[in-house]
Image (cartoon, rainbow, N blue to C red; front, top):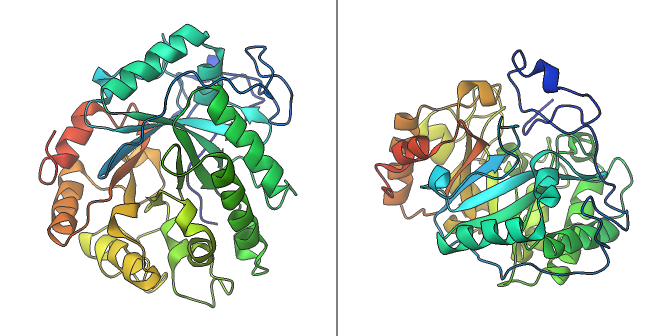
Length: 342
């Protein structure tokens, strides 16, 4: 089974295990249901009160997710800690409600949130929330795509965020071959864009790269090729997960121009040419350390060379990393050194 962004059980109290657990951690033992009328701040979710104007980071985007509990703070990274990145994504907003860093953000008072957002925007950084992750399987669980989109959009507006990243990982639905996942995603994305207008809010998707393969035997209904055809105009860019796919995407060649035969035509330039997607919409996703994914890690120097090669061929999408603090300011400076130096 293809896995990607990971989330420890939200219903386990893990603070006593921090010294021994190496994966992404959830400091919270509760979530607030997405369909609830009240979030943890006590606000009525039906009353939308944006706390700041939004900011859409231009290409190239250098994206970092934050999900891991950081001792000593419940706030997002500071502007200084994010130097070199221009998009931060809080993980995760689940069907059951906000969790981990998304929940921590809601528990800050309104003035603190507004101050953080203002500082980010002044530094040219967008702040978003990631929906679903590996915890949720919205299609398989029978979530209504339009109602779910409306609730997520309301959350984005209420907390003054710049947009939402759709980290859909319902592998059973995608692998079923019925087209249920593709249909759900297209309906959901269009409904989300109806609530979060283009040019005012960001909508990104974070599919695993193999979902763009041209292999109809693997995905007879097209997987993300179909999603792009049906709703691509509503998606600002793709945070492509080029990791947790075995030995694929571990060289500049298989990452950029010629993917392995397991998932044909799913490298960056092949995805662009096979699907008529602008190169600036394809953001290369990688783990920031070998411990952040089961495979696909590249050293900063190797990845820097790949980005340089891609840029020389006209690509300017940017790079995404799972996750902070392994993806630090010094890490991204090294990755960008040969393409867009910090």
